[in-house]
Image (cartoon, rainbow, N blue to C red; front, side, top):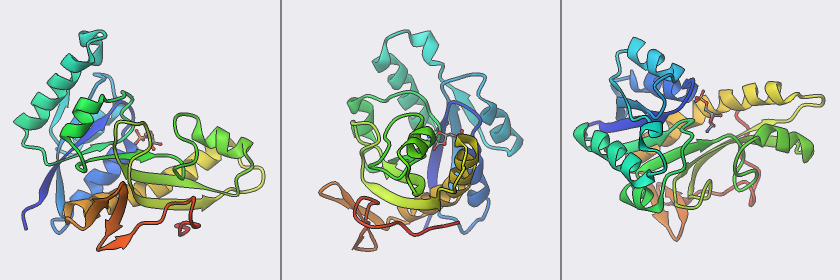
Length: 219
Ligand code: GRF
């Protein structure tokens, strides 16, 4: 089976991107990271990608002002030029319109630093601590037009320790992110993930979300 061509979209440091690049170094991994694309020319992850020998490109959203359609048209052109099969958002800090999202339906993944459906949006670790959560974690999901709401592919959990700071918790969750994103991409690239009525099935088995069961602790 030929490897799927993946673009990773970043805006910042790109540690999840680096985890995907590392996983894809194994020739048996079913996807290759063909492109790292940033909306910010100064994203640190671009340097990391180049050092790893991965092609990079930049579509600077600032140049498009408020014209989201033109920005996304430029993104789409770069993705098509590179014959991309799957797009992974990894700390990509632009909201994408329904038009773009639909073009990539079930081929557009995102990683979110919380156990969705809990804590959509920003400041997830702070909010998990304030809510007194005992378990926190991260989620890889397909992207749908509504933010942080798409079908869940993989979740990974960590215990919240007494006295945890936001930073300490974020670090532990990040460790989980670096494990579940390569796993989720592998499953999608192997065509083992199906979406039925807004829920993922892996090898025909329904993926539970953390509101229905306690996810498997990875650390
Ligand atoms: C991660 O916590 C990810 O879950 C969130 O943004 C952060 C990106 O970090 N979407 P990095 O750029 O991958 O290091």
